[in-house]
Structure formats: structure tokens, C-alpha cells
Length: 456
Image (tube, rainbow, N blue to C red; front, side):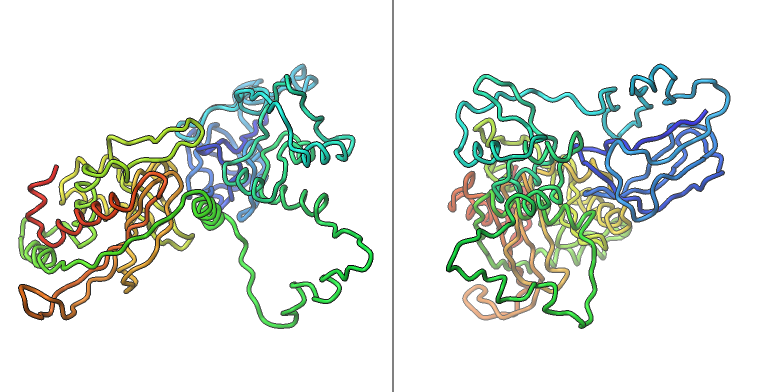
């Protein structure tokens, strides 16, 4: 009996994933939970285990192809049963129904028989903007009908970045949903709808349309060498998240140059300690420890702005995000409960996090839920910058390079080891004075590591 395995929800309602590589081929015998393929979501590369035991008959997608959640991915010939798990009975096939396939642990909830998750119904707004009414009345016959005041409607399926993008363009997602059907709406769907409905220039007498004068952008560089790279995977997600953050949270960045000579001397002494020979404790480890200590005195920077509930959510823990540059783009995995770790444990966690990120094996769970982040731009020889907040966080600290330079020390000019810290924060939650005090607390620990003994 043939059984199909459909792409499951890999976490946080992601709508699609790209097949990086297949680890099986048609004709291969596979065991239960054997890895079938590596797929890349908008957040990470994950391995898909097999929910069946049997022989591979068909691969429904090629490597490099993007597959929507719920679409057939691979088919098996499952022996030993007249009715394999996930197969359709004649009566079910006639009704267009499908049996639930096995749920993979760690990859989201099992799909419902209705083919889409149940969502809370939302009541339509009591009033409609005039432009929305006009668009609805002029819409094609297959467009969604306008909801009355008392009608309960269901929000179209889409991700937060897509909803924000539609809002910026002034596109009604209900109208797009009427065109794309039951699947999740993507940015491409919104752009296609905008081109069809709103892309025609008005025909006004006496007005010269600029398109008649300026050639299309696609022809300006015709005949010259160029390389086109598809926007997908981590890069696509990062771009959407950064645009959403930049146009949602009012960013403020403050800078502070710190004398870290005492910290560097402490780290030098650690290198000579044989008991610490198996550990790599660097400046970033001390910064991470200083941040965890300082956040205990600045809860506003370990919080998020919940616009829907009209509340500021403060965390009683620190899931410390560390920005990591990888071949697939920037990701921000986090160290869970970082406030409970010693300096040595933080150093080990940072090393493990970095190696996992570079190998592309960071799990989706490690990329969700960070409460405050650090970006180590110093590894690139950069002194300072204005980091953008990860969505849902109120603070991010950029750590600059350590440089020897002349500095005033005890009334004289001396060569000291200096570092610049750049703190960006959400001004809705954090006042300038609070951000400055936090930065000063971090600097105090770096200037005098012994002060860490006074903080809790």
C-alpha cells in the first residue's frame, strides 16, 4: 500500500521549507525514524525523520525546491498491511477526506482532517474604511463578500511579517485570500494582487506618465554581467524580521567606550591556569556575564511590548540571544536561562552555540524566544554600530573590537585596552536614563571585574 508523507509544520506556523538535500532515493528501504532529508525553513536547517517503514517510491520535490507545509513530500510502499498508515480508503477518497498522518515529535502539531488549523474567529469591525468598501464592491465575482457589522469572520492565513507588509501596501488580506484559496498568503501573493488591482496608472488627460520617459529598471543594465541570488531561507526571514522591527519599534542607540584592561588581564591569567585548559573564555563571555547581571537591575531591557494586550511583558529569566553570521545569513540562537550560568558555563555555551550555528545545525527551538541579544561586531574589526532589535525584544548590545590606544588613566595618559559598547533599545519601553544606567552597569563590570561580586 502506498503512503504519502506530507511536509509537517516545523515550528511557529512556518508556511514553507526548502529541500536542501535528500538522504534517500526511490527504491531505498527505510526504517522508522530514519532521516529522509534536510530541509531549510526561514529559521534553520532541520532533519526530517521517516514516520513509516518501507520502500521509497516517489520523491515529490527536488533539492532546492520550496515546498509548502502540507504538500506531499515523499511516498512509500508500506508492506505488511492492507491499509497502511496515512493511506486513503475508497470511501474516504470519494469524500475527499484524508486520514491523519503520524505526528513527528518536535515538528509541530499533527494536521487536522480539515486540512488547516482551527483558529479563533474574529468579529468584523463595526465600520469599514471607504477605500475598503470601494475595493470590495469593485472586486471580481469570486472575491470574498464584504462582512456586515454582525458577521464573524476568520483572519486569512499568513505570518506576522506578511501581515505587516500587506498593511504597509494598503492591501486587504481578505481579498488576497479570495484569490489564493485555502493556503497561507505569502509576500509574492500580495505583490501579485497589488500589480493586478493597484498597478495600473490612471489615464488622466494632459498628464505625462513617467513610465513613458524612464525605461524599465530591468533594461538599464541589460547586457552587463550580474549575478542573481534567490531571496529565500534564513536571508528571506531575516530581511522580513528586520524590516518589521525597524518600522515597529522606535530605535535609540547609545554608545560608551570602556577601559577593559582589567578584564583582558583577568582573561590572560585564565589562559595560564591549567584547570581551565579545556575552556575558551574570551571577552564576549565576560560581556555576556555582565549583561546578565545588569539586566537584573534593568527589567525594562529584558521585556517586550505586547501591542495586542496593551501590556509590557517583563521576563524573570534571561534567554540570551547571540547574533551569529553563517553562510546562510544572520541567525540569533539563544542561551536558555543564561542568568543562572557561571562565567565558565557561559563560555562553554557560547562555544557550543557558535559551532552549531556555523555547521547549520541550529534547531528551530534555539532560535525562538530570546529576551535580550548581543552582537559581537568586534570579531570583524568594527568598533561600533547601531544594531537593529530582534522582533519581540527591547534591547540589543553590540560589542566592538578591543584596541590599545592612549587613554587618561589615574591622571596620566597611558596605553589602555579599550572597547566600545553600542546599545540599541525600544524607546517605548526604555527611557534614555534607563538605557544609560544599564550600559554603565555593564561597563563597570568590564572595567573592574571584581564589581561582579557586588551585583545580583
